[in-house]
Structure formats: C-alpha cells, structure tokens
Amino acid sequence: MRQLTVQLEERSYPILIGSGLLAQAPQFFEQYGLTKKSPLLIITDANVAPKYLSTLEQTLSTAGFTVVSAVVPAGETSKSLSVYQDMMTAAIEGKLDRSSAIIALGGGVVGDLAGFVAATYMRGIKFVQVPTTILAHDSSVGGKVAVNHPLAKNMIGAFHQPELVLYDVDTLQSLPPRDVSAGLSEMLKHGLIRDEAFAHWCEEHAEKLLALDPEALGYGLERGCGIKAEIVSRDERENGERALLNLGHTIGHAIEAIAGYGEFLHGEAISIGMAGSALLGEKLGAPAGLYDDTVRMLRALRLPVTLPSHLGTDALMEAMMHDKKFREGHMVFIIPDRIGAARIVKDVPVSAVIEVIELLKKGD
Image: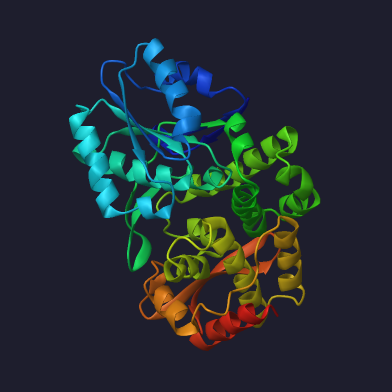
C-alpha cells in the first residue's frame, strides 16, 4: 500500500492507495475517526452501485457500522441542486447526526456532490472519499466540493476536507477505455504544472497506463496525488498557488457548460483546455514548441486536443465570463511557461483567447 499525507495541521489526512482496500474499509474508518454509534450514508451512482455498493455495505455492516445508501444517476447532471436536495433528504431520513459521516463511493461527480452534502448537513459532518476512477485521484484530494449551476460549473460549493481518501486500485480495472484516458488527463496535468520529469514519464508509459498496468498506475496515482497534496498543503483555499491546479480548466469548464456536460468527459474537456493554455503560453512569450510538446503528450494518452466547430466562439467566451477565475473584468488563465512550470496570469487579452479558440477549432 502507498500512503501520502495532506498536511493541514489538525485537519491533515491520509491518502491510501492500494489493492484490496475496500475489504479493509472498516478498520481504516475506525482508525481515522468514524464511529459505529452513528449511521453512515454511502452516496454512489448508477454505474458504480452494481459493482461495489453491496460489497461495501456488507463489509461495513458486518463490522458493526449502521449503513444507509443513496444512488444517483451517473454523470455530471447529478451535480445539481435538485439531486443535492435528494441527498439531504436521504441523510435526514437515514437519521444521520453530527457524529455521522458521508461516504463518497465513485468518481469525481459523486465525490463533489457527497462532499458538498457533508459540508452543509448540520453545518458540516465528516466524509470519506472512496474514488473508483482515475480522474478522481485529482478531485478526491483537496476538499473542494460543489454542485453546478446551469450557467457555471462548480459555482455553488465549499472547502471541506475528507477524513481520508481510500483508493482501491482494483476498482479501476472495470473502467471503459475512454474513462481511463480522461482520468489520465488530470494525471498528466500535475506533471505539466510542477514536474517535467513526471510529465515525460506519463508520455513514455502511456501504453502501460492505458492498459491499467498495476505498477505504472500505482506510481502515476501516487505522484499525481503527491503533487496535488503538496500544493493543497501550502494553499488550502486557493488564495494563490493552488490555482495552478486549474490548468486547462478555464476553457475546459466552458466546453462542458456549452456542450451540456455530456458531449465531453471532464478529462477530455480539460485536455483541450490544456492544449489551448499551451497555445496561449506561446503567444505570451513561452518558448516555441510548448504547444507541440503538450499536444504530443495528450495524444499519447488518446485525448482530444481540438474543438469541434459547432461550439460557438461567442458562447464559449460567455461561459468563460461566468467562470470563477474571471475576476474584475479580466480573464485569468493558468499559463505554462514550459513543460513542468506554470504561472497565474490575471490579465489575459480577450483577443488572444478568441484567437486560441479559433486555432483549436482548426487543430493548428
């Protein structure tokens, strides 16, 4: 088992990565402060529930925990206020109290939704992230939880750290190939912003990662989680450095909003956004070749790097204006200076962004 720690003083918590960890969930839950005296609510989705829900329920019940469960539709549409209300109803009907905990069993959508429920139920109760996707190695770490508004992604949310992240890599073996690639997008992102050697490692080991090779996947998840944990430990509430983790997200979130949270998986939209950020980087003074290198790495992981023409430039720009990173009339982007180093640019010219969007549509 691989173990990391997110260092946040009294709110520090472990990230446990390994095989067979779901079967050991009761001992880890007790070790990190969950009580058997109050009910637990497992929130999962319709794709994950048939695979792992009954096993986790039985394992916890056998160990003496009281467990109730709620299953939401799979997909980004479950990060909504209406589904959030349904989960609050499940928590109330399940008689959860201030000593209870929410268990997020699933990918990033489930983690964000369940975490926001935990952050707001009785003004905040404990929760545990049990990710079942590669993409969730990013979203399960750091305590950013949220639901979407029809006009903007993650606009309604909170910072609420989990008690632990329990990452059973056995659950990744059932992922469809497209979901594997989408998850690896965020893994590569960590290398692009902070660790050039790791970014090149992701490219060099792309086939092993895509084939879910246990050794390659274990190292990739550990290093990806480690980079995020280091950044979150220094800037929990995104007052500075943590914003670097949003590389590709300004354009990516706009793509998701315009395409209706369905045409693209999150990691696919972020991949296109990272290609766009590299283009912006070159326009703002980064060395030539940054875009080509970034695109090559993304393509090695079988990720998209171009925008479909039917996504209107005006609509994408409007969506970016609603993004949380749009401040005081200026466009804020995370811009790479080179592979492995990025910076926050708070006054990106609108004309440059429009030009990049048009180039992304052409694939140039």
